[in-house]
Length: 308
Image (cartoon, rainbow, N blue to C red):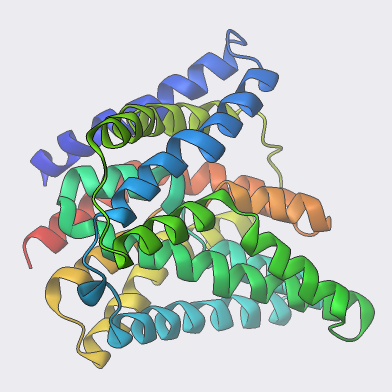
């Protein structure tokens, strides 16, 4: 356990460094916004393209893996939604809180950290989790909020959800990489070196940006945020693990799926909540709390996975 903690510590130390820089205002909010923009559009996209372009597509898609992740995550989503409704929250707020409780920081934290800790075998499962989160659950929350506000799901809501998918650089870079892999084209050495060099900026840049952005999050409604953080860090990996066992997912991809589910709440959840003006403070506080607590919970989960 100590060895795993020490392995994950540099990743969380980078987040802490970003938080300290933002807190001391030596790295202002405007700089954080542009660093995030660089990582999102360029560095992380280069990393994802290179990973996807070198995958064995025949071994990538596993229906059992997809079903297990969707069932486990969907069960947690339904639980979070039911709890929020039970507490008297409106439909849109309940849906957003359910989304907060099961959407992990797979892109900025999971891809660089899990691949570094668990090796190249983690690439395919982590990319699959990232794809399902962005395509299935992000579309779901968009449609539910539209239905809650307008009483129905119209063409505008469907178009907005589709636009969000096809204009997301992470989705586009993964799709381009998978297309490259499907054509079995080799990466020319200069292109490989370029992508490697640019992608190398993704890990430190993303982690630093996560920490710096935490200082700009408004904190409020701590009580609900504690429940949402517990759902994300404890219940989500537990639900996914149970579903992986039920569907017979092989141990290696099942463990990586569970590790991805154990990640803290994604930062882009706040941007979505802010865009819809729904549960903003709860989402913000859950990001802050879950990221801080995950320093202890993520190593514990990875330790359990490595021990089988």
